[in-house]
Image 1 (tube, rainbow, N blue to C red):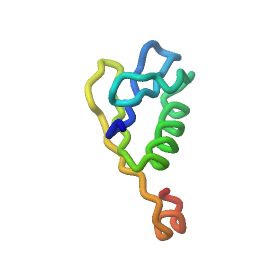
Image 2 (image 1 turned 30 degrees about the vertical axis):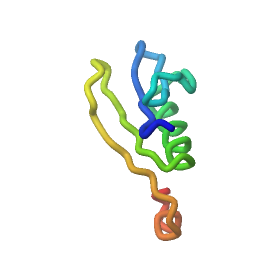
Image 3 (image 1 turned 90 degrees about the vertical axis):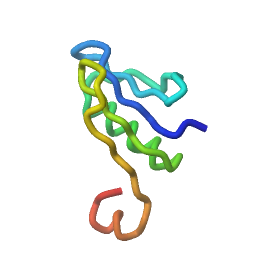
Image 4 (image 1 turned 180 degrees about the horizontal axis):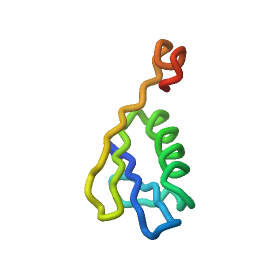
Length: 76
């Protein structure tokens, strides 16, 4: 099973969510939409999200949490 879900830009209005192994999970019209989907998938699979900038460079890592404290404060 992949250890991370990636969010990558293809074009101005085309963002891809894909597994670490290369399998695409979907195309989205904005970074925010792709990031939201990636976060949900990563949370379910208990892996991290790696968000890349338009040039492909790693910009941010998110580690989804499913704990009750995170849900209580809206962080998971």
